[in-house]
Amino acid sequence: QVQLVTTGGGLVQPGGSLRLSCAASGTISRFSSMGWYRQAPGEQHELVADITSDGTTNYADFVKGRFTISRDNAKNTVYLQMSSLKPEDTSVYYCNAKSADYPANFWGQGTQVTVSS
Image 1 (cartoon, rainbow, N blue to C red):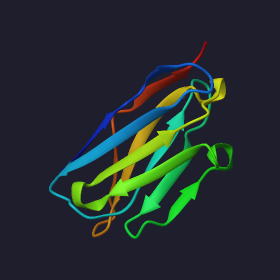
Image 2: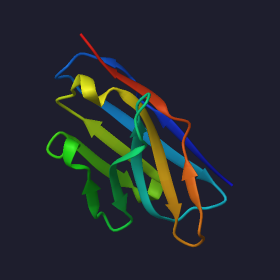
Image 3: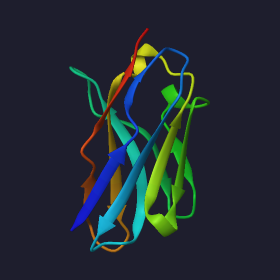
Image 4: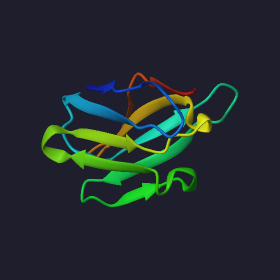
């Protein structure tokens, strides 16, 4: 139905920046919300940030002021600009998209972000 292709993870030094992208394609083209979650080994799956189709954003407290989420509705793509990265941001980041027309929730394949010197 829907494929979410995530790009942009990698290794970065503390204080550095990375940008994640997630492009949705498939039979569903309208998403009420798109966002990013993360899960580190031994930790819970947690919301990082999400954004609605009208641009309303929501951030976890631990990324406020450092991460910026944005969205291109025409391309069904969501971005996460991560700055001032900390070692504790090391995790697998997952893209999420919620259908605007059906009770369906879709996930990307996950991308590793490692913050280390």
